[in-house]
Image 1 (cartoon, rainbow, N blue to C red):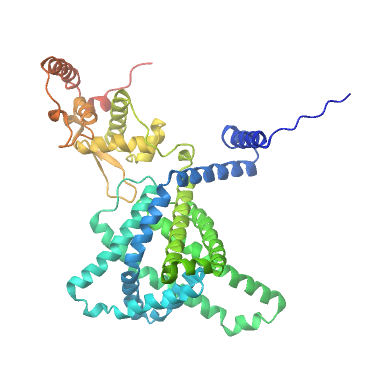
Image 2 (cartoon, helix red, strand yellow; image 1 turned 180 degrees about the vertical axis):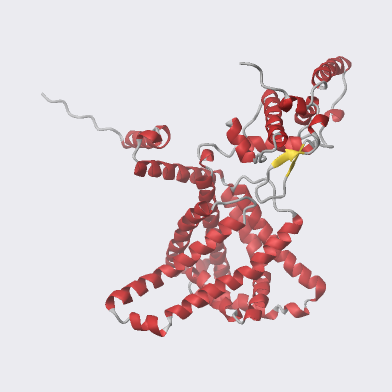
Length: 455
């Protein structure tokens, strides 16, 4: 007699399915797969990494911060853009563009747009005076700085632009960016209203094609704008391919979420009853927050596309033993000195990480310690390279070990603040004397100029 097949509980089936997906994504050897499955696995790994970043909460926290900064800066930003656009005679385009951005808010979006434009028109840049004008630009630059900090976090960049570079770069975006955007929109509108295009649209085939282009136009403009943001804002070199892929996904998310949010607004009569006069503000805050989250998600996708080695590496800080720090410091210092001594192109942090088979984050920690002790210095290029800060024959090996030993000490917490003990001090002094005796006899130049040992 046939036995009845035992039914597997739903939670067990879900666990098995999740385990199979995990094995497929992380354990499968990519070399054994066809090309389409390799792309699928890599895409799944990227989305897993982005989901992990969202779950950690930092992206959403920074999006909240940007919402607050945007509320403070939107009127000054538009006032500056209005002044620039007025010189080109396209200042009247601000209101329809702003209305378009706030379309998901429905009637409330139109109301908010009218209020903002009213504030902008009342803010006459010419009568603000020197101090008022300076504060106006400071508010705008503060917004750009906050945006850069959020993107730098996503890209694991620890250094912001220098102060002078912030002013030049940010003002370039503020002055030139709106002109290019509004010119592109105006050119597109002119083309769509051209007599020849109107004539072509009378034919069924061409008419459908033109209507399709018109429907895709908002997506195209958003994707191009996001690509520009992802390339320019982070203080590192972003490849156009990575920026475009991130912009493509975030642009589609932006437009799609706009339609969904508009549906939510239509059915949000209860919120208006609860929040009364604050309903418009609440919806604006939610839409701004959603927009910033989408922008940061796209930046995160761009980062993982360009740096696939980070996909399986969590963001949390990896701890290094003192022995490992010392070994890495001597290795990194030797690598930098070899390139300099042999007159070869200098290393970037990422190239050093590839050479040593460790993450760029760990390399940067050691580089920062060496730089703090004036052993190395960064170039001022878009992607910094590292060079010796002093002649190689003036840097003793003990200097490298000392740089690691005193890293992260400051005036609030250092060895001088700790209570003294005669026997402990004696042991520490003996250890330091021994290290000095051995390591002070060789310099970095000795390491890189000695011939390799015979095989």
